[in-house]
Length: 210
Image (cartoon, rainbow, N blue to C red; front, side, top):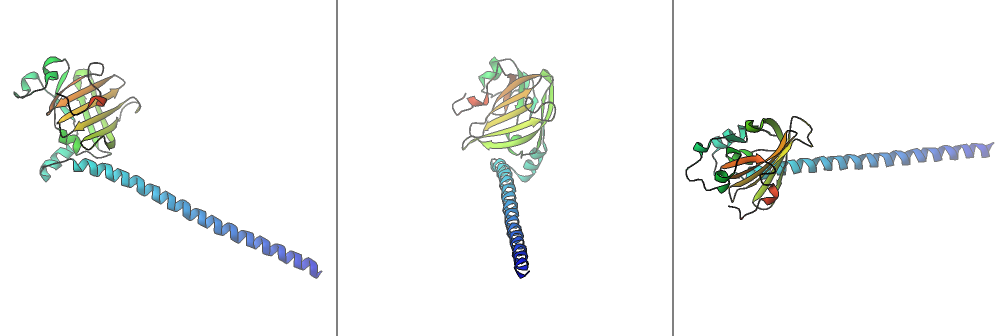
């Protein structure tokens, strides 16, 4: 009888020990998982903050009121007529190619952060789209690329990129929609929007253009 009681007691002790070990392991795993998730969230937030900070660092010599005005502007560029071109414009593309002439302030996009809204009004091509910035990335020490997705349509077919050099006052945009694909080449605040087969791509942005 005593032997049976001893066996039962030993079995109960083993079960209790196993439960304690399992509980301790599960607590450790839970803490490790929580720590990993918090670290991942922190990294993601840091990346977003860095992207936004990078965009802000590109703004030079602007007053606070000018920054506020430009940051609230959503329309990326405005269509103009040839007689509205500055007299000192030195951009052969505008004079020799067909397309939609535009006026562009590069600081509008420089002030945009991830999540901000922008609008593309290209009525000559039947395009009037609203989108959001989803990524800001440096291409090199001077060139920056903003990537966004339009609110309308399949995001894999409706998106845009804006690649910009502040040093050269030069910008290339690529605009993709289910109606067609377009590019804009801009120098010193004026440029031309064309269908993609006529224009340039952002892979051609470098520091020895006209």
